[in-house]
Image (cartoon, rainbow, N blue to C red; front, side, top):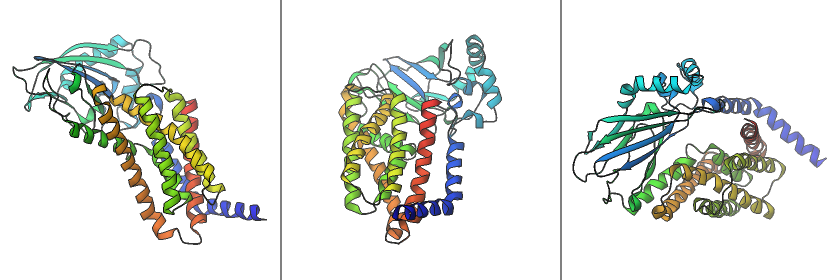
Length: 387
C-alpha cells in the first residue's frame, strides 16, 4: 500500500506539472543545436616576434563568407543565410577557399591587431579548407594571416568581431609570458607581449581563469547546473547538502588536475554521455528516496570524477602553458566553485527557503523538478551517444 501511495503521489505530481515540464523540455530540445550546424568557437594561435604577428585560426569559415551573424547564435539553421551556408558546406575546398579570398577585405575589417590602440594592416597568407570533411560536423578550415609591427616593444592586442562568434586566443612561443583566453562579444585580448616583455602578472592570470571557470558554469554549463540542482533537491538542509557538494568538489578537483597535467586522458565521447547519465541517476534517486544515504555521497564522489574530466576539456581548449599551470588551474577551479555556489544559493532563495517546510514540497517541487531533469539528461545521453 505504501508503494502504491507513493506511485499515486508521483503520477499525480507529473499530471499536475506535466504541461510545465513538457514546455521546458521542448524548449531545451529546440535550443539544442544539430551537430552539423553547431556554432563552435574559433581557435587562434598568435605568435608575436619583435616586428611581426603571425596568426593561425582554426574555424568554420562558411558562416563568415555568407555573412551569418554568429553573435549569440548556437545553430546556423536559425540564421537567415542558412540555405547559403548549406550550399557552401557542400562545395569543394577550392570553391570555399576562393569564396573566402573574395570576401577577405570585408572579413579583415572585423579582425583587430593593434599596438597602443592603432590597428595594423593584415595580410592573408594561407586558406586551407578540409578536403574530406565529415558532413555531420562543421567543416574545419585553417586561416593564416600576419601583420607588421611598428618599432618598439609595446604589447599587441588581438580583437575578433562579435559577428564572427566566440574565439579562443592562445599566444604561442612566449615562454613565461604565454597567454590564453576565451573572447566573446567582440572583446579584445589582454596586451600580448613581444619577445622578452612581460605584461600580465600572476594576479591577472588568476582572475582571468576564475572568470573562465565561472563562465563555464554560468551560463554555459547547463549540464553541470542541472546536476548541482539535483544534489540540492533531495535535501534543502545545510549539512547533508554541504557533504554532497564537498564530495563532488573534491572529486572533480582531483580529476581536473590529473587531466590537465596529462596523467589521465579519457575521450570526450565517453565522458560527455556519462555526465548525462550522472544527471539521470541523481534525478531518479531524488524521486525514489526521501533522505540522503552514505552510498549516495560515494556515488556523487564518483560522478564528480567524471565532471572533472569534462571541466578539463574546457581548459584543454583554452590552453594552459606549463609556467601558468598552477595559477590557471587554481583560478579555473575557484571560478567553477563560485558558479556552483551561485546555483545553490539561487535555488535555496527561490525554492528552498520559502517552501522546504511545506507538506507538499516533495510532491510539488522535488518530484516534478527531478522528473524534468531526468528527461533532459536522457535526451542529452541519447544525443551524445547516437548523434
